[in-house]
Image (tube, rainbow, N blue to C red; front, side, top):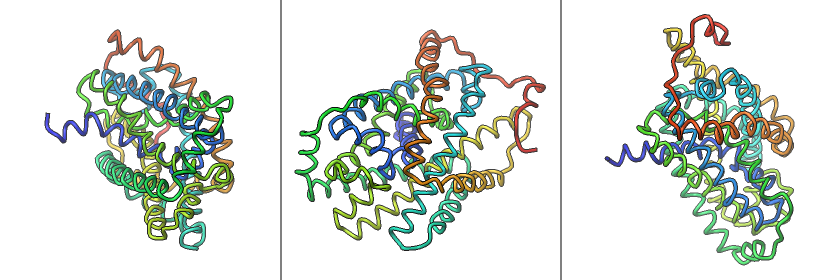
Length: 381
């Protein structure tokens, strides 16, 4: 197997997963405070590694194998194959989750622009609108290329961040982890964190087209968990050295950068972080475009190319409106609302019914529905 094929089959799914979850999962650091650091540095680290990473790998592995066997490469067809008519429940949860994450992205972009460059909040929002629209215009190939490349760049910067943090206050990091207590609820917090982030797994199934077998799908999924969480662990370690004062910061990563004190690295890292927000927005919206494109295909036509950017602008504008609630409230309350929904309509079904069907091989390739049923879909006409 050549290197390119190996990369696409085994590493690309994890890199795309990491790219899409980062904007709403840990790009600002606020999510890591809410779900992990608030339980104490040691408990938070255990929740990330022993709970969230393991759940990510298990669910991703079964999902990729199931999607390959069913030949379902958009979330609508995949969930329909898994849940039957219950697929509508997943879509309601996904759309709610997507708008919350887009609101977080808009709020973070505006906050970064104000703190870093002293420009008005909406300058950052307009920048996000333009960048996401440009990325999704190119379709799956463009999205894959941008997400994978930026993910590798991000790995390098997170490594530099944690090295600088240990040089500046490494003793504080070690002391914070070694001296903290495990507060009740840390393990379930890891499950909840995984629950809302796993919403993205069905949304990135366009990368499963490269997978050639059930075994490859399982391996790619198992690898995806660590690939997605390693940068989060690195950021968490840097944040732990500023515990507990960092708990109240709306964008904790900015506080870490200020303590490190390198203006050049702070500017560069913020630009990288802005790119992660673009990644997440593009991935989420591309999933909606692929879902609609699947309906067009079933009807024997093709999704107009211009629709891809139009959908990005419309959805991000809605998210911008929601961003007025503030990033702290959006993460603390918004994610909690959808987490239990995804646990019920995706995580539990894929780890029970999905595992059974993957192991037994009782998965038939998906076929287009009868035209009468397809007419019920809500798509642009």
